[in-house]
Amino acid sequence: RSSDLATLRMYYELGVRYMSLTHSCNTPWAETSSVGLHPFYPRNVSLTEFGKEVVKEMNRLGMIIDLSHTSANTARAVLLVSQAPVIFSHSSAFALCNHPRNVPDDVLQSIKRNKGLVMVTFHTKFVACSQSSNANI
Image (cartoon, rainbow, N blue to C red; front, side, top):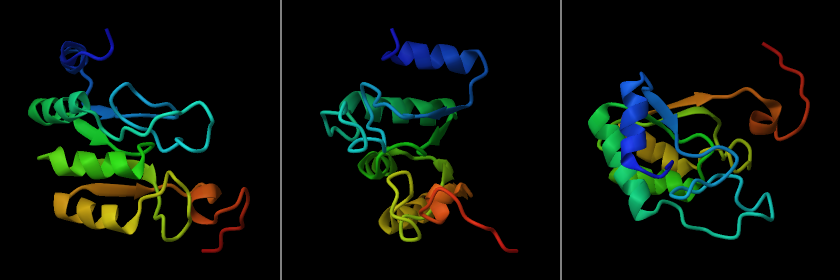
């Protein structure tokens, strides 16, 4: 079964030290940032009670929690539960570009308090709000 803490522990024993809570689809316990972009996401659950247990178990094991691809509400919920720093491995600032993968200001402030990390992606959709752009350095 994929929604089982024993599965998470097994992956840890196999060497996994980092996990994204979602990608382009919801997991049974966390919501993706793709909700609203596709018609096949009928629910808005943020982080379920089981999802909170996943976060706590990842903290206990020492696994890094990646919030890239999660909805802003899921990120907020995780930040209320996690006792360890979390990361956004490839997101940008929502204030810079209004894209659901980007991190809103209130979540950025929570990441600061959490001592977490936001690694910026330089894909033009996330920093220039377009499909193409010219970079000048």
